[in-house]
Length: 78
Image 1 (spheres, rainbow, N blue to C red):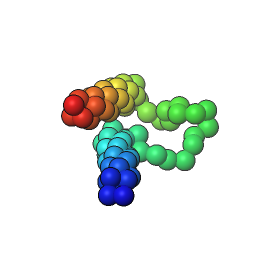
Image 2: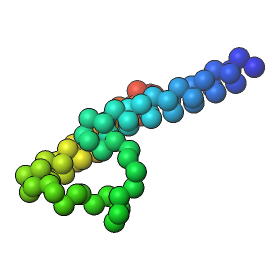
Image 3: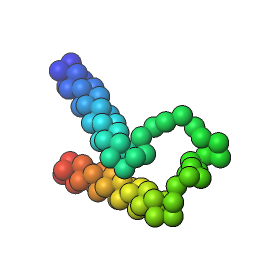
């Protein structure tokens, strides 16, 4: 019985930690969840070229950070 409770707690904690990490990465890169825009995730028209490139680089960095965090959690299991 104790093992079942421990297993469920591990699952819940893992999901909570993952969602917290994802939310933090999204907030840091400006990709926090908002209402849907027309045309999917299209950038607003009022961004300059430099701002658009900066936003794109931040999104790429967020994806890489998320992937590294995932790999780190996977490696730490062993």
